[in-house]
Image (cartoon, rainbow, N blue to C red; front, side):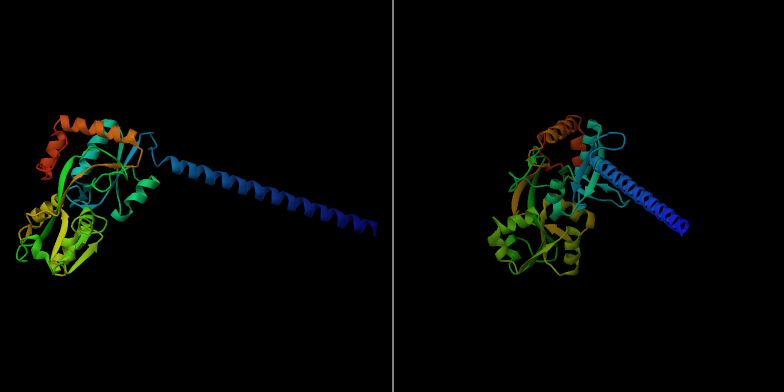
Length: 286
């Protein structure tokens, strides 16, 4: 009997030891996994501002459907006046150029979160002066009306009763809701679109009668789409473009401006303006 009890006690001790070892190994494994996850997260956070080689990334936020300032070309590459300027700035400063297409409605969230370093894409200063740290203005811009040549619309007064399209969160919309609210009140409707390509589709289909937009974009669309469209001589409003940085980020603003002025001095700025058909709009260095 005593022998049987001894055997049972020995078995119970062995089971207890095995359970203890298993629990210890599990805890150790869990701790290792947790540490690995923390290390991975830290590494991921660090990668948002620098490449693996330690080069600074310059993340440019832009509207990918806003030619000639920023858009996707026929080869599927992002390009445009603003994007080529940004590439030149990055080359001068030794930065890695990272174009980040954004939803224009979400531009402030992207900037505040650090997903982008600046908003650089036909970005109007007027009305936003206190919301960002701004660069020196580099383009004089106007908000105009684009319509079909056979629309019968020749003046702003002719828009009475018409359906006018406009990009959401755009300067054209701000003008029509602000200083030009009385003009907008004469429209049959003011229809907002996420981007101007969608507005053009509706204009071609006859669902809207005209589009309120930046003159540089309007001129580009008229030239690229061939005959059939025109821009009214009367402007809705006038304004200037600048590069918008997060409020208080004067250091990055100054670094970009210094490089941008080098592009003005060596002639690159004017060459790009001519390439994209906006020579009569640029004002930096004038």
